[in-house]
Length: 431
Image: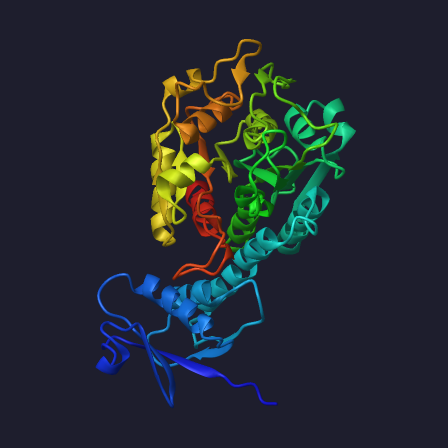
């Protein structure tokens, strides 16, 4: 049976009135037309891609005038779905644009596919290996790595990852990956990327209700996003040394799981009292931030699906940004604008660092009841593990990583959002 291809064209004229007022798409015997009027053309194309997929059309060709890199990519963002096979015949693009489109398809789709995997299929070992395979596939022997797992984490002082992950039958893992294109072991580290990789988050003994737990296979979204961003930056020409630290674990309930009131002793001398086992992301990120600080890098970026508070503040369409370094935050926002991605800065002030009091340790892993700025106090907690937190460090709370249900511009599942922005920031800061 011959596969039927649906041609998709662009028009800047309104649709015939029979399709309804301000109709986004219309069709005839020649195929489907997307009607672009006013501002927000890329968003309209993404919504059109979603509508066309929703009609059960799986094989399309982007034809006619007007298709460029950004419009083609916007269509793919909406058209793509985790369920079923889709094919596109891409328009003729200049060689540079075609190469960039291929990069995005390879690396951002890798991020979306990885986040969408069931937790049963993506444990700590599997996530670490997928990251290694992707980056070695891009950079070959410029990539080296070490893996610390299981009881070896405790022995080597990776107390956060070990404590959170010990309740699972699958060993927790810490991945330290080094992209060093110079091949010089003494080359300075330009940037460190630190990702939260909770491959399933039950909440532990502070257990989540089912309607919050059903998407927790995506709680490793920060690790996947940073891995994809580094791969994209390398493919775009990054020549500076970058280290990637992924703190990977399941957060489960068992007789060996950590409990409220436990105290974690970190390598930098900080002690943390656990008063909510569902605030585990910050506990595992702390280990990565300690290692990142030791590298004295110019730039530290951490990314995590860290708080519901950030998502409440900005919704599911923006990533949240927090940091003390105004110039770095400004640079990240400029990178997001250049890549057509939405980021929003949330407040982070010195006083937030004092809103985590504990009667038995240096810090509590959640803010005191009198303080409700959940995203800000979570970032403030992380700052205690960054040696020079006021300069060169930015935290991304990945509010837009995953959608539990389809909306007008996105299928259900992972979005791949933020990959382009972080890659852009790395390249911009490396100049």
